[in-house]
Amino acid sequence: MGYKIIYTKKAVKDSEKILEAGLKDKVIDLINILKENPFSPPYEKLIGDLKGAFSRRINIQHRLVYQVLEDEKIVKIIRMWTHYE
Image (cartoon, rainbow, N blue to C red; front, side, top):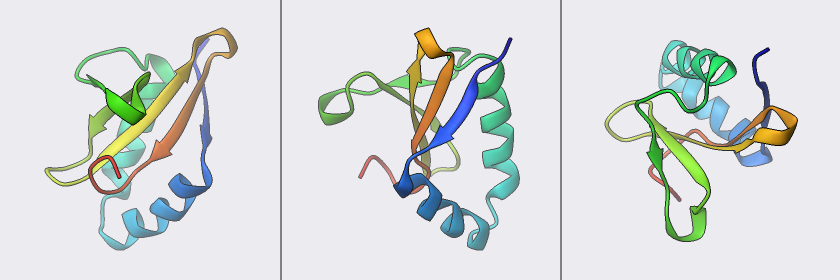
């Protein structure tokens, strides 16, 4: 069984920017990977304010930042724009 994907309000706002930037297909590919296994490489464990969250590269500038709620089998998408704002 895969993981359920949920989005923060900021991630939903970021999705509009993703569409405008032409990055929709890349983000969909990343989300499909997260549904199957959010711990499959390559990902980066974050530190500081985002400790406990993970990041995957959308492109050179933008990252998909997410948190895994393992007990509930949920991946919460925190941000999809810029670099760890």
